Length: 522
View 1 (cartoon, rainbow, N blue to C red):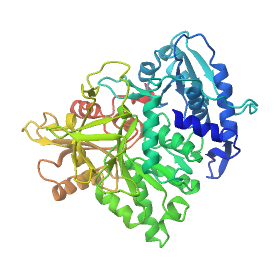
View 2: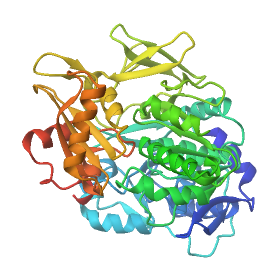
View 3: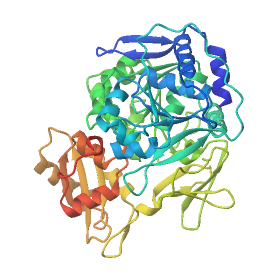
View 4: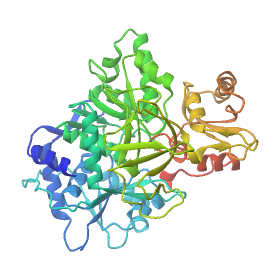
């Protein structure tokens, strides 16, 4: 990752803030300079040891903390393979990623989670655990330049879902991330990442790219939520709970999930209704920050509503198999309803059946294990994404559905569930929605709703909405309404808001909605 190494060389001894951790009141509780972070990274490198005879494989079990950043930079300099593990994973999921690691770096939250999982269940007996803390004195030795690395160096293994509860790992090359970051720098405004607020887990590759690497390239500051605060996508109420900290952070950029975009729209309506200027009310800044969104579709009407408040949201599309971003709407090229144009280093086309194919210099190096859900890279270097798309004359991409997610009902009707879900997500009390129906006579829908919602009223509203806005084939005939508690959310939806359809279909068809523990409790 040459561009990051160059940035580190330029800023390593700077006293400028690299990380700012907010307190419960929203004020900065602790600030870490570039110098402190890089010196602590140098100290961690010295603890890694030698004699493995191959690239070191290191698990990172940390929350969104300064320790995660320190570990990430240390592993970059050490030319090691980083394996970040979400704290919300079950023991089985964590074990699937950590099985081949030589060391495991933990912060306080990671150490507690490791204890909950059971160290013997997730780590090899010879895997050493390195506890990392920023409460110790700042080391005096500066960060040394990274050693030589060959072009094929694999710097990360990033989790992605498989057909079982065990995730598979996507192997990412350092050169691929270099290509990706170069493209993002070419299309994003310089200085946009001067002050980035991180509200989703840093274990996600996109958050490492935007929240750490793009910040480093802009010489900016990464702002983190107070310790222990639920990250967006890990708890049902996290998006709403994050809003006061968004205002306090005064961000210039952030990546938001669809749930957070929805929370912004509600808060913007309320601010405008009270006669307040919307951007200062929501973000503490005169103008809106660079707001980016991806993971699951956002209804175009919601984006237009935010536009009316002066809050443009830039939707994008990415895959871990492409080292994250494939395409993105940018301030200079934005079209609502699309996921933008491909980045400069990416080529796309559609197959005869509408499947989106991707060819780029940031494609992955393969998976850690075989799985039926693995994407296929053909002999000509085109990645079959499994997503259905349209390309317009100006190169903008519209994702129309997921090839494997197309529902075929018992009546033989084909339905794209993503579009249906985006319609129902407009209901103000709906936190998350998943539609299933393979082999069923009608569509079933799981609706996770606000805690204060009357379930009977919500069910009636869902049925009325379907009758007014969707065709008979598309509307949910059998709604299942439940309060959006954290266990249900983590069980049936990913961090970025995508439904885990197999789990939803199994629970609804077998009547086990409340009889199975969530992944985080396993």
